[in-house]
Amino acid sequence: MFKTMTGFVGERSALVVIVACLAVMACVVALLASEQRQHREDEIRARGISMVRLLSGLPTNNLVSEQTYGSLLRLVSFSQGSEDFAYAALVDEMGGTLAEVTAEGLIVPSAPIAIEPSGWIGERALEIGNQGREVIEYHAPVFNNGLLAGQIRLGFFTPQFQLIQRNVSLA
Image (tube, rainbow, N blue to C red; front, top):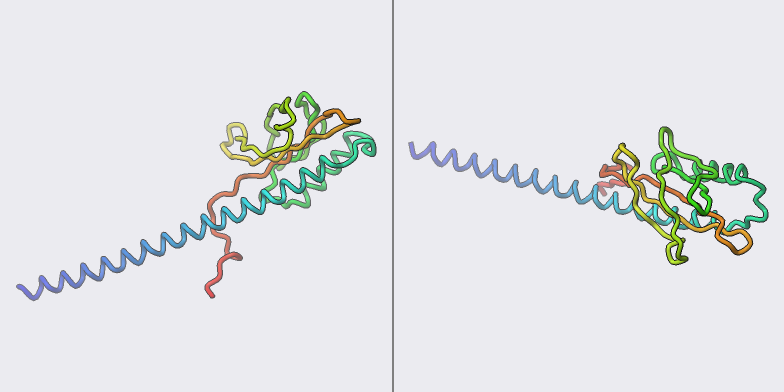
């Protein structure tokens, strides 16, 4: 009878080792997913800031109409890819949309334009309606003859936790 008790102890030890190994693998996968998400957020931030500064720096005297800006915004949406891109919009000084390009089935969320210059350029997190998705928005002012004429708003979906195989290397 004593012999069977030691057999159970050996099986329990093996089971504990297996569970511990599974727990360590789960932690490694969670850390990897978290790192990939942070890396994607950093990439989105770099793209968003540079693109919104580029678009807001265009001389408004050379822009014939909102159609021209609409074409530029469509170009931005194609260049940014479809996975993260949510919307690009040109709004007037009151926040009304002049031109916009959005991902399929998406409406640009309303957001006020800051009155003080310190809030004209920035980043904010917005929630898209009842869909529950969060968007990281980058915005910068558009000037016409030295006066605030509107704002460029560029939104990207907040990356979800997921493993991207091309970023995983076993070497």
